[in-house]
Image (tube, rainbow over the protein chains, first blue to last red):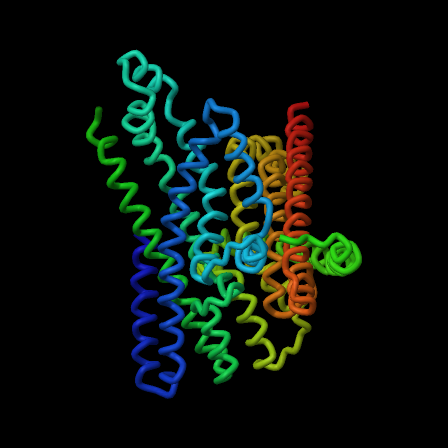
Length: 240
Length: 221
């Protein structure tokens, strides 16, 4: 598997660079950058959790039988897809206090990124639900399953297999998008490297490390995605 | 909440209107560069020279796996160090164009692959020249999938231009940040900027849809 080899090489190169940096003058900026990387990871994980929840909520609500629910989902999806993430982050952090809601930088960053990607994920979830054959739902009606059981036991488990590739790609995009949280005064890996660059003027080294870190994160998510895909499509290979 | 309409009309809208020009300029400049860059990357990626194609494939992977903001900062700080001094707007446009050309390359490739093999073979059997094969057979058939996808990237680029405010390019987001810190009022400026993006992307999404249906109909004729 070519991707696996690339990731292993990337990881080794990164560790090599890390040890190199520790034993040379580069060590002065590494601690600050690693602190930034931790912030990036925290924001990514929390935002990814929110992203998955919002994708399912909005994706299912968009095909709901209740009109107000459907309109709410459509409004959410259009507003968050139609404006820039940066504008949304600014709005959450600088404008919401005008309405009396003060968010911490971390909360604003997680909410902004998670809600923005939830709107994109909703379409992935919805597409996957539509890909489940109609007969599955009809069969569960015929078997007298409740609406809820039909959704949670029949439709969603089959839709999950279809949505994993799309959701994996969006998760990688989400990690990349967390680079914007410096707009709400969070010091993530991107902002930390800008700061360190202004202190030490070692652009090439600093930004190469940053780029490699993001690349490694993306490769890990890709593996996670294909592992999940294997896990969820096991029953398809059993041949029934 | 106190929304002040006089402030909105006298200060926010005129200044954002000026900055909108920079946003539109950056959008179209990066889009045109990305169209050409994508074509070059696609040709290099499908090159018969294995080393060239592997290097370009990995390069595309690397660009796609890292945030655009990091690339903008990288170019912004690195270029002066190697002796190239460009205005922030130019280096920003180059960064956005580079990022999106990797995406355009995929679009071109997918569009060409969507043309059935038999079309190439038929063109060869009819003894058409390479130019006529492309001009009359391949390109007309690969346009319907390519054009809407490129239109979506145009909208995506439009929504990426606020990133340029990080390197002090005077586009809309930068203008609204400046208004916010000058008057200490963020509400109007940021909200108007958001509404501007929302309206522009809804309108252009509709335009892309129109072009898509037009192309579908013209190919069926």
